[in-house]
Amino acid sequence: MDVKNAFLNEDLSEEVNMQPPLGLSVESSKVCHLRRALYGLKQAPRAWFAKFNSTIFRLGYTASPYDSALFLRRTDKDTILLLLYVDDTIITGDDLSGIQELKDFLSQQFEMKDLGHLNYFLGLEITHSTDGLYITQAKYASDLLSQTGLTDSKTVDTLVELNAHLTPSGGKPLSNPTLYRRLVGSLVYLTVTRPDISYAVHQVSQYLSAPRSTHYVAVLRIL
Image (cartoon, rainbow, N blue to C red; front, side, top):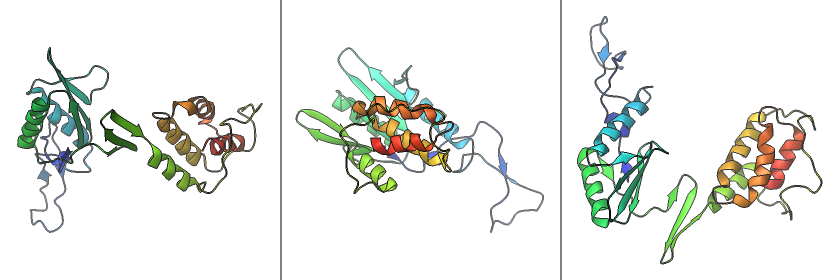
């Protein structure tokens, strides 16, 4: 489910003033006192999260001790889970009537849009079948290859070159270390569904502070 205009739902606990927007006629010595958050306001994300917390707690949900954005409600018979990511929510569980109750409750509190079954979320593709859920990052990996111009490159048999040993001083310093860090970060996220590349990714992730040409070649080999 998607929360429309999520950052406009919350009240501000701090006093925040702003210059009047263009077109609003007010005395030159006066400013606008905000009662609710606006997009772009530094306090907006925190205020929205606090608003959502207090709302869902009223329905008997609690925050997970492992992830503050994961909310759950357990009974002796069933469990319902809700994951909040900015203004998107994923709801799952084995209590269908409880899930519908939750969706109805949230729709009464906020302007919501039900997007149906989960198919794509943060680079994860989810396929539903009679056997359960199949999760892949095929599109995420394909986009990564397109960004680096490697879609037509030949594949290799191994992720790490045989007998190769990366060192902090090998090769020349990269002129654009940001690209290296972004690629390594993307590969780390790809290990969610591709644990087989974890060792190779771990090797190149050790040189994020000062990447060199040999490290970049190793990243391209993984790709």
